[in-house]
Length: 279
Length: 313
Image (cartoon, rainbow over all chains, first blue to last red; front, side):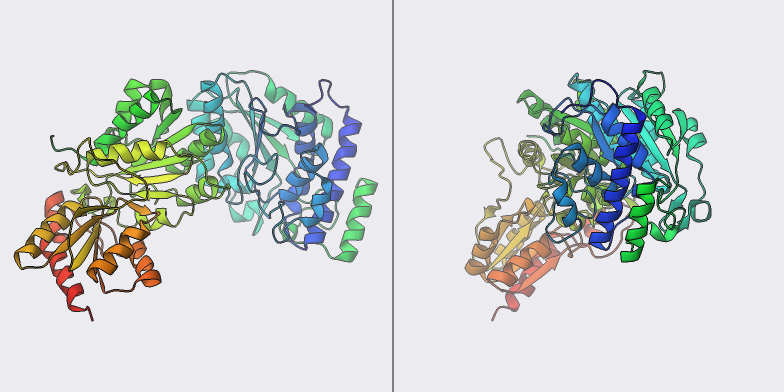
């Protein structure tokens, strides 16, 4: 089904988000590896996008006029596959195979292997550039699809992100590319403030972007931020969503060690209970 | 026919691809005055873009263009493409199943870039490019072959790497020649040894064969424009017919033509091989002076042929 003509109400988005969080934790538990922290932090952004904003048709993943969703922070596959499965791109039965030998659900996204995956990922910093290519092609072909790019804040350490940020402005692609930054403040080795302190909002402003800041876990605020980003403007728009790494699971929240670690059986039980209770 | 650099074929071939209906979009990274991409841009402005000094971004943009159905071409110097953007080539272009439809045309390959010196002299680009699994890798020897090679890769859906050069060279081929991806061409028959060469080294190999002929040695010249996929049949036939092989390339002897040929020989028909190439970093100088400095000369190739012949059992 194409994206609903009428937007889903916030409480319905919240219940989708709750199920997605459970899927993320379960997938990483089943695989005993993967990246739960940066998956849980992006949940509200992804749910608002895929249910209320992205022009897509899961039954026609190659529809030429579809909006593209490009996951630049490619390690957030539990989040990505959870959304694509729930949205109907493939059976949620596949979740059990996450990261197993020969699975379509590879550790990092593999283009041309799984419906809905627009770009191969896993090496950071490449999504915004990829979106520019799609945007230029769309302009040449007179198609008006948008390209939504989800970036991590740690990923913004990569210089290529800024090569692309300046090019989006230079080529006037602001109405074809919308960037979203999952500002969870934690990267692989620890807290961003210790590893490489950056401040995405003024950086993007300096490159000529309009920055829309929001609480990345307030579903209504996220949904409003995406709506604002969709409105035509002179500058390209980036949503900087303040998020919490591991959001929804007490022992994963703000805990760098759950960037790329699986819960054990007791932790899974606790995590699912906390998600159900809506921590 | 007048002397011409292989890089001069790039804008000509791109325009011909467009005229033949291929949906080309070409990108440059602030070296278009040298890659000559700007000449294509002058003819088809909507199909050409400069992305500034940003090779990584250029590769990502090309990947997105290809994903949206375009035949994307990207150009830079062979030191920067693939050297400055190898991971982007690998992740964004090579790894999606089958590879994306992006063609790299890297100019100023090898040491004959000249006066710019060591940092500008690409002697590792073929090693990097051949390591990208779905890529075709081609090193044309003259303008006409470069023109045909660029058109040929533009008509496949696979990624490709084509290396062109800066100096103007005498033509080897005319319009009757037909380039085919993956096919070697015997330019001179011979029975005692085969010189397998690509790019600028093919004209040097022909001169070496002439030197050898004066001493009664019959050297075959097998021009091998496609490094990957290598023409296995032509290499095996050369080994069986002549019993000794010399490889000659304007590149390190590791990871380029010599490695590709030796791999076939080790697998199918082991014979003595001598490798001619560049295994050190360079210096400034005129391009023809540099060929001598690096021992990429007819004398050196002929000496390598004698060495290989001497090792025959």
